[in-house]
Length: 308
Image 1 (cartoon, rainbow, N blue to C red):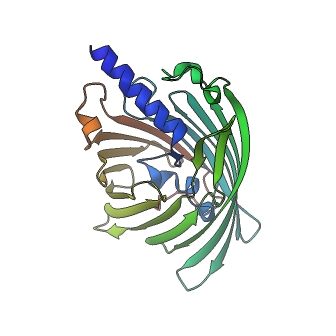
Image 2 (image 1 turned 180 degrees about the vertical axis):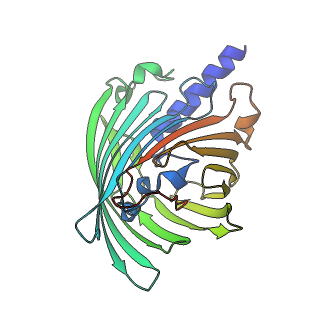
Image 3 (image 1 turned 60 degrees about the horizontal axis):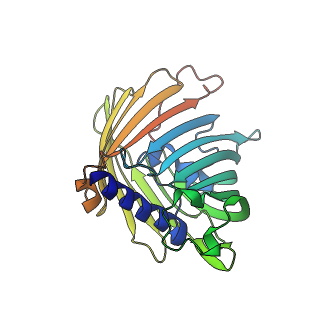
């Protein structure tokens, strides 16, 4: 009986992933993956920055979302006013597989003695595949589900603005300005809706060895619930980080990170659902692993983490 319930739940989740509005990939460690939501962040760390992130959502539920991300960004030019970023995101949910290839450009302007304003532009190539053989269909004669979708291509563009000082940042972005309908036969199976992001954070120096950073990510998609992520992270001796996060009406998370070397940082996060889904025995939470490499800056003996 338990297996039947799991299959019904899987089928329900899969149908939602195909037929309802699609949203951007979700991250708990978004503070280490800012370029995925805001192209204006490209090159902001003033050095080559490579981030790999893996997320397994709702562990134990067959067909639940998994996300793999690889992102690279760096400054360009003698004055480092320009920034370039490239990234690939692959997400699988039940019968669907989506891959995004992104290229980001940014330009920074000094607006005060301590503040910089960055403007960003994103180009997106999106590939969608759907294997309808993995669905338990109610109407086997529906022609809309008779032919699989294989790497259907759709382009998109995005924009962003990002302001920061040494301790504060705020950014607003729309990574996908174009709304795309996914059609198979005569039926619209889903649509990529426009996602609006607002991010912000501030770093407090509690003493010489401890930094505290509260942060906020808000995502708005019309037709879906408002997502609000609030996190609080501590950094100890510029080596170890620990924090807690809350996703409004969705999940509670714990985050840890360790700066292995001056260039290499490893991070983990665990989410537990606060919804009814979290009370099922098929869901043992969501996991994330992150690895980030920063190329040491020339003529700088020690790379000090800026915490964002």
